Length: 183
Image (cartoon, rainbow, N blue to C red):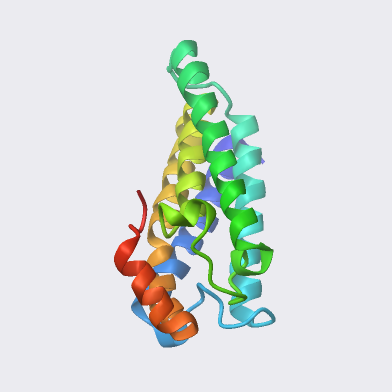
């Protein structure tokens, strides 16, 4: 597959994930994200597309690495620290929340760790990490894909905020009122 073909396929898959999130926001009764239960078609559909998009994006990064015009100091002294900081913040959030909740299952409410500062630390960490990766990779094609993924992560909390009160009630409402969506 040529790099332009790889970019096109990755772009389509990324747009489909973005469409799932927008659909979930617009039609909450028939949402795909967050999935209604672990063994549902929505769960499998979202996560399969997510894994495929991740693999394609990494392949595109490798194929189109350092083909743009960013200077190396910016790439390395800004991009790499952002990548590492975002990855560490995301990992801290995953550990605080637990794997089950991370994968969209309601397995207990948490407001500890990074959840004290933001309702969505995994998304914040992922967005910072992807911005760092975008700078470090220095690729227009990968940059377009990563920007779309960042947009998707910025929108994902919106359908979750429709879903969470049904699982955590007043506890979540009080948390939502006192903790910002991002930072």
